[in-house]
Image 1 (tube, rainbow, N blue to C red):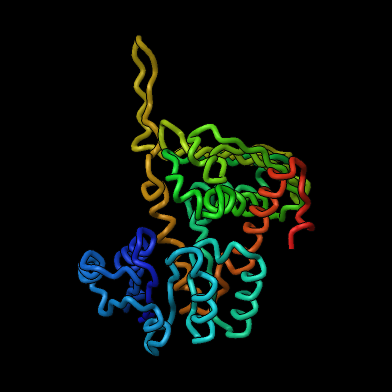
Image 2 (cartoon, rainbow, N blue to C red; image 1 turned 90 degrees about the vertical axis):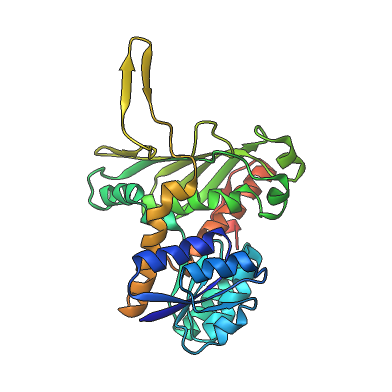
Length: 336
């Protein structure tokens, strides 16, 4: 039985804990650590039958019986904990982003290689059945050579201005998933990015130094052109769609809804709104990414989303911010 420790008992840490307990029989959550340890966290751990609960994550790193750690703490801790865990010989699942500084991510890549451990980054959308179907259509050649890619990602409600001020900006906090998805769906790498953005949802987000609405165009190495559109607020729910258009055809995915029922009457035609919350939309993908991580450890397989996959979307986010600030296309070669 693989024994895992979870560092960070916030929303995503609890999601992963529940996934392991309910859907990953080959693994056990041995410990949870959170510096804000309180009775609520202790009660959650007891409910999940987690034996050890700490306010100091180093106890997980130092525990010889723990095989791997899930880093679900705040972004500013991912870099240091990743290196500590690698040096301790622990396999690592790290939520995105690994860091907001590319030099630090490069250090993590070096430490992981030297330690010989498995290191997977939490880009869960790659494990969503809808996005996987698009990638399968590309890999099988059914759409031919990829010409155009469109990714729509709009949240149901904006974050607080306080969060916007510390999140690293929308490109690093939100669009980073879409940058990864463009790489995944095209099976190619970005060469140039142009971003246009505005504050159209919440003026306080602008006062915090961020944007809440954007369109990003990306030229890929295989010749494809991608377009991402983002908004911090879609009044009708969590809007997650994509299309790949190629020389032989196209593949499109729509939003998940509570049901596929369409009601037609003399007054009009109506259907369900998209699911409202990201956990409703992507819960299956969170489970599947942990299943793949555990499988990579037990069967010594390559992780499907490695540290390099954690680096390139961050570079794309930095390029997009540079493009927005300087009002020009930015080549990826400019970002080190």
